[in-house]
Image (cartoon, rainbow, N blue to C red; front, side, top):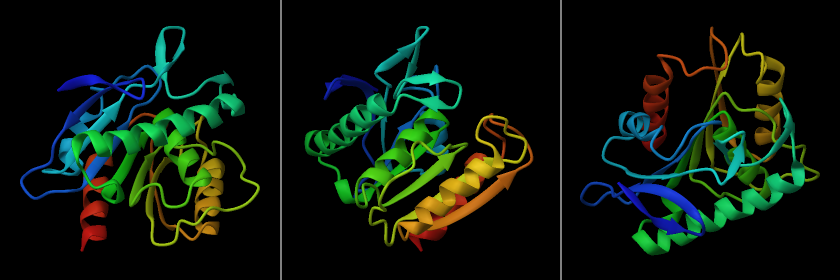
Length: 210
């Protein structure tokens, strides 16, 4: 259900089942909102808590997590500010709702995947793991962060004209350079969400838990 804003973010929070401390952070794509990925989150991590914020930037009325100057060209100063804001939102939400901040796993699609990647390229181990659907390289870091032990699933489209295969490979390389454990998986479509994304993400997350 929708909650009062935290750190300026409209959001949905669903507590986990009894004894479940883990939380899935859901980050929508351009034009989405805090409700869009909740059904996907329930399929990927049944019983987990869900935290789903709405991006605070508008592009022609469509919510995003940070501004872009053109397709694939990001406003890096805005990205820096918005990345810090998202990290503060997750920290404050953990305090407000009483979930384990160290047990947060990010699941982002497109613009949401990009800001999740930005946080991982900015801060040491901001998530226990991350599922990035159709991500791009948000920026080229000057020095790697410490992502040792952090599992990352990158689901990329072989025919994606936005997050091209070369871009997906570059992001995987950057994350591996920070010692993340990256699983780069391909589907045969483009930038859109694919039918197999939920099952693939759920299987990967369950395997990580084991």
